[in-house]
Length: 197
Image 1: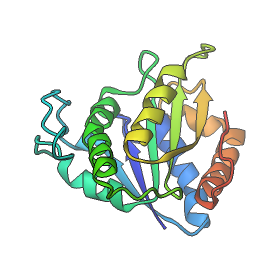
Image 2 (image 1 turned 180 degrees about the vertical axis):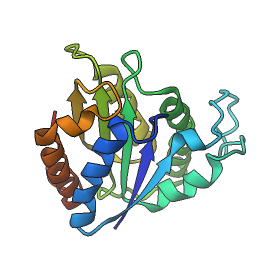
Image 3 (image 1 turned 120 degrees about the horizontal axis):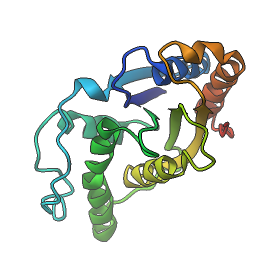
Image 4 (image 1 turned 60 degrees about the vertical axis):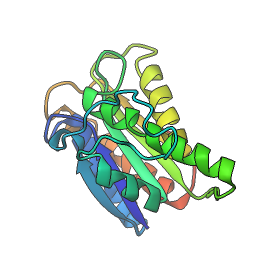
């Protein structure tokens, strides 16, 4: 099983990437092949709320998001990874998520026409790192990601959340979390409870 990984951190080899790559060791151990897509390297325009996808289920904006739609539709496992910026996902991640509105309309239109085929095997996962330890630091990001997966017709398969790491390299100090991340990656692929924080 192939796994699409949308890495929303603009910082290469930062704490979110270190955590994500560790979790992907578990994904690979479970027999899946992850494909990492670094959102910061792509040109994804924000949704312009033009209504173009309302009648067709296809986004009229042509940019680096365009080929991602087919990839999303074709896979059964997706991971979104983003650090927390002001109690939410990064701008790169949010632009990507907002553009999944076309997939929501695709699903809506196919349900109306009777073409829709639900696939309960499709699941999405969320990885996030926050430097601060506010009690509600992840709430907004989790809600955003959950609704993104709903647009992509995926069940929410859990999350792996870490508070504390700030400077590049800090994540390596959280050895216990990294061990748990590998296990969470395996569990996500096997369809087991992967919720860890």
